[in-house]
Amino acid sequence: MATTQIKVNPDDLSKIPAGQERIPEPTILVIFGASGDLTKRKLLPALFHLEQVGLLPKELVILGVARRPIGDEFAADMREGILEFGDVDGADPKLAGFLQKIHYFAMNFDDPVGYEGLKRELETLAEANGIGGNRLFYLATAPEYFSPIIDNLGAHEMARPDQGSVRVVIEKPFGHDLDSARALNRDVNAVFDEKQVFRIDHYLGKETVQNILVFRFGNGIFEPIWNRNFIDSVQITAAETIGVEGRGPFYEKAGALRDVVQNHMMELLSMVAMEPPVSFEAESVRREKLKVWQAIPPIPILNAVRGQYGPGKVDGVMVKGYREEDRVDPESGTETYAAARLEIDNWRWAGVPFYLRAGKRLKKRATEISIQFKQPPLMLFNRHNSTGPCGEIQPNVITMRIQPDEGISLRFGAKVPTTQAMSVCPVTMDFDYETAFGKSTANGYERLLVDAMLGDQTLFSHRDGVETTWALYTPILQAWAAKTPEVFPNYFAGMWGPECADHMLERDHKVWRHI
Ligand code: BG6
Image (cartoon, rainbow, N blue to C red; front, side, top):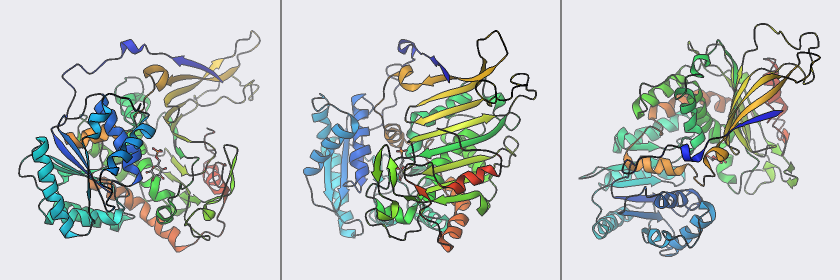
């Protein structure tokens, strides 16, 4: 397929005018569960990237909190994480100063005495570093600690600011079904006002995800055709080549639907389908997203399928099946692949199917959204020879590549240069992020961490949104839990998922996009 690359001159890129960057107030960032992978692999590298570009307040303390008494080893461990996962040079002139900001406090999350100690530690650090009352509590622990930590912050008077602002960031999973999400929301809102709460979904920190709104609402040509009159169907894929990566016990309780579909994929869907918000502010954006989820009718069980990988070859390497993974039940019924067909019953989308699929150990790593347009009403070309030199005429497709190989492409038909006939072949116009804007080492948490420090909730989930998406998937989870699948594993690692996912689309005379 021919490809036309659109190039952007980096010198033309608009820069944020000096002095207009949003720099948060002096803050203590308290990370609960700081000895876990997330802190080392994502949070600290992201914080250092922010330091490199001058977007952190000068007076910042990062206080890691976890059970193990590791003291100064913590900062050394974080240094390693910053270098390895943040792609940072050890000689970076800002690194030594940044590491000075990192402190550690050991405590048990369910021990009230520990919270008294934590409170004193925060007062001491604030005093020593010229920081007033601003606190950002980041819950990166196992989910069973979310409520105890929140209760204790309330009970020990750390949740309400005397002066400054107190905010709490809550990692996923936010509940494991509708009831548990509601219970967690109740616990959270018993201590914190909704304005203080930042439920994080790291997909919203990705540039390519934010760009969906820019693509749609920052350009004049797409929105007029972004509806049921022109769009035939939408496919959203989150395909991973990795397996469960040592997270067996977590994944056994989660599965693909809870882990990725209910949250990341529903966020992507809402960005593609929402109405233009009245402004790019938290309330307007979140209201429009919620309206999309509320317009989705219950998903018939027939329109949700699950799969589990057996052994197979991924990228030429033999890998074991899910049931052979460390600390996974050898008869596990947990799905490592989930797909669903949804509709959105509103004026813009009625009748347009949205197909979602997510899985581990698939053939290729690719997260993308593809919007397939309707065929022209009259086929003028490739008429007498319906196959043509490139086969049948293909419908137009806009594909947003979220990762890797970030970009957007438009497929359209072009005349094949020949004097003999009017033959049409598909070609693509392609926008590639790296070519246009250079390589980025950002991992998505940079934007979300700054926004949380600034109190900007636009890219965070509201309680109503979380409950609405859980309400959609809970009946499916219940139906799946009631019946262990007989045919698991039902796809080989390195394939595109189980056959039942293909059959679901065949009913609509469709196929999954070939990636
Ligand atoms: C996490 C899931 O939320 O998202 C993981 O728990 C998954 O299982 C990951 O691998 C995917 O994130 P990304 O940014 O690599 O697409």
